[in-house]
Length: 107
Image (cartoon, rainbow, N blue to C red; front, top):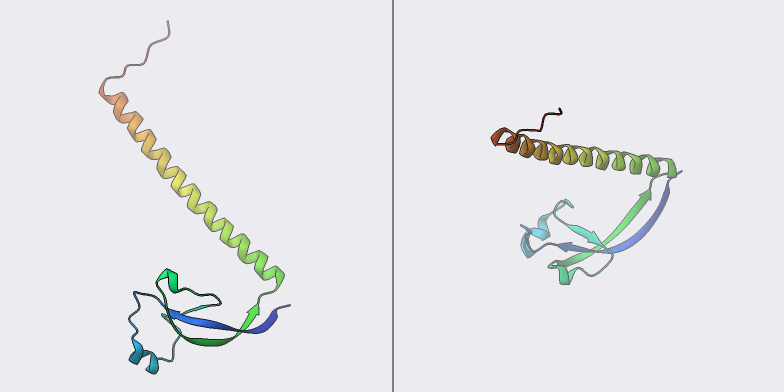
């Protein structure tokens, strides 16, 4: 069962935003806006307004499923990065061995 509540938060634009004071008067999209409940001034953001938002929190089962999916994605990324590093090490070993290394033959 989802949980819904309402809150007020500040609306910000980043220092890299394409918005200016005039274009913000015409926008009807939240794209490019950041909604946060805290002051973001020290991070280079400009306060441009307030938002009344309705927040619907997913059910516990949905949240757990989403977290598991996120962790599986992180695991796949980690496996791929690990495999890439291992391949680089194997390549370095192979290059070195092909230059001068002759393994000792067991007698």
